[in-house]
Image (cartoon, rainbow, N blue to C red; front, side, top):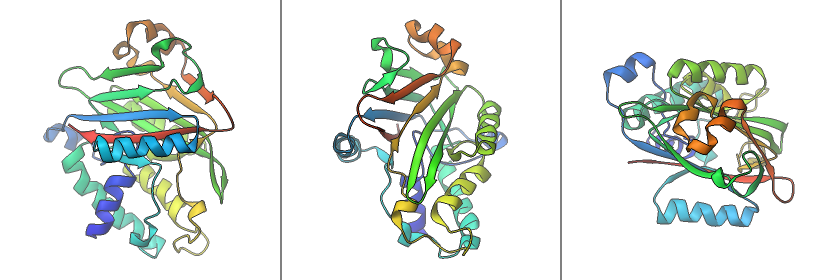
Length: 260
């Protein structure tokens, strides 16, 4: 269980601090200051270099791309939800609500899309005493090998907004990696790691590794537009930012988090 806990704490916390908790519990215990980052790269080689910088030099927990640590998973799908729920319960004590953070750093300049200004490299911070809540989800174009057609990221200033968005994306066929809803997180990774027909772990890593390669990224800041640099307020209010690869077929992204 210790190995499994370490695995999920590092690998499954995308963009932001991992650890689900109900709004009621969130109000009972203080949550740590934390930073989530999302960075785009043009090539997998650049992405690999970025992972090294964040992980080894800046001491972030890199969530995407994730290594193949499937050997630490329960063998049977039936055992996965209970084991993962324990991980969420332990990790919420350290990191707070799943998908929440106090600082966000975004480097979107290595992709085509809106906004076209230099504002594609920016930071946001929650108001004092509050947090930002995020949802991160990927829509697969194929399951084996796993290819992500679109990655959707959305930000909210309240838990209920993030929960509603997560449920909507789940119904649309997205894998909801991060949200305040534990059941959707468990559902997403159950699909990734296990064969629904046999109930056993998948053995082909190409079928469950999230590499960070995605054909499109949509980032919706409309609910927290006032936290962005001023010149981005109006673009963020009008519509989500949409990004396409600058070269080739994919955007190669890195998601990482750090408790401050």
